[in-house]
Image 1: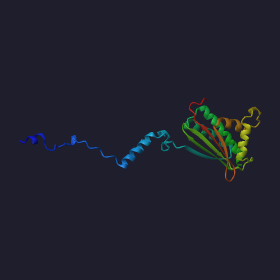
Image 2 (image 1 turned 135 degrees about the horizontal axis):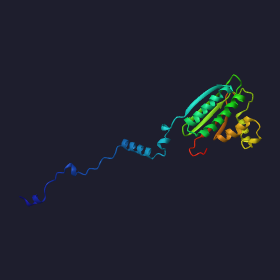
Image 3 (image 1 turned 90 degrees about the vertical axis):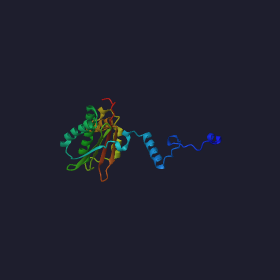
Image 4 (image 1 turned 30 degrees about the horizontal axis):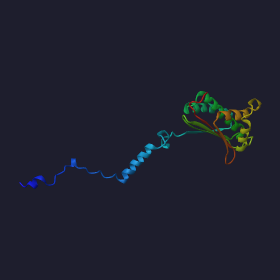
Length: 207
């Protein structure tokens, strides 16, 4: 045998296991999909904050004639929504009941004339907040604008309550202003006012 041929063998065969072939780069679509997944994982929005997972507010509207006879039912309903459906303590449920009672009585006595209606709308999310809108027709004995109501509230909320001689005046400036986190009034198109109050839920709030 030729010495050169024994020392310089021909080409060697390579099995697939021995091959070192670089993997092809990921396609553009796959890269975009992975990038989207990474961004989703790094989002500052937690799952509970994702709008798609947020609990929808409970909204209930009640239309009442201007008759104080129906107030007992509104008081009971306010307690149920505030305590059982929103999660406030019993003490805060009683307080917010007084807030709604004050606004509703004002609408019945001064906002809508006899034979007409008032509208009360409850909006709440359990463990978050409760808000109430009380709407009158503006046909009652005492016509005031939203600006008038806000001015009255601002000028009376810091007054010594013992100097207020009328029950309703004391209720608006003391009960409503102190036991609601937000208070507002809006002039209705076509006449009348809508009073709006909000109370936010705070698990650490003292009674």
